[in-house]
Structures are given as C-alpha cells and as structure tokens.
Image (spheres, rainbow, N blue to C red):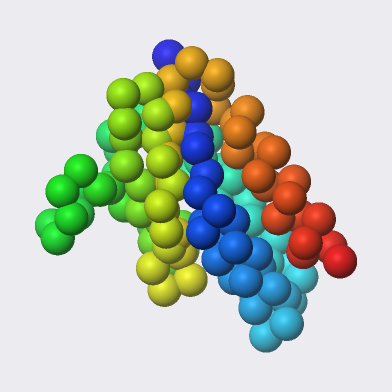
Length: 118
C-alpha cells in the first residue's frame, strides 16, 4: 500500500532555494538532476517509508540521502509521511497511505517548478 507524501511549506521554500542555487552556481543540468533524485526518493518513501535511518537526536524522525551533501528528514505518521526539512541543502518529508505516492507531492512540485522556471 502506497503512502501519501505531505510536503510542508518550509520544504517547498528550501527546495526552491536549493534548485535556484544549483542553477546559478553550477548549471541547469545539475539542478534538474537534483530534482530527479529528490522525486525518486519521494517515490521510494511512498512505497517503503521505513527505509530511512532513524535519527539519533530526534525521536521518530528518519533521514535519507539525496546527494552526499543533502539529506532529507521526515516522519511517518499513521498512513502519512511528513516532509520536514533538509540539512545541508536537504529537507524533511511526510508520507500518507491512502492517496498514492505522488498526489500531494506532484502538486507541491509543480509550485516549485513554476517558481524555478520564472
């Protein structure tokens, strides 16, 4: 059963900042690769939300690497996974069970892409 990913506003804002930074300092290809890796982690987490390593500092928080410089932290609540924040250039995430892997994520991602394209 797929979990629903709930993306917090803080994640969306930080994710946009990271994409803009990557495009300005590196290239559009690097930014697009980072976005694809993040999308892939969302899909994996929607299917297997307990795949991330438990945080030693914060109870019930898990983390997965996006790149070696970016780690995404999230919580699993019932049938939801909540995207919380990113460390380095990374962020956190939340996932829900019923709606499917990308329903809420796709909407948030479209918002980020619009900001990124402008």
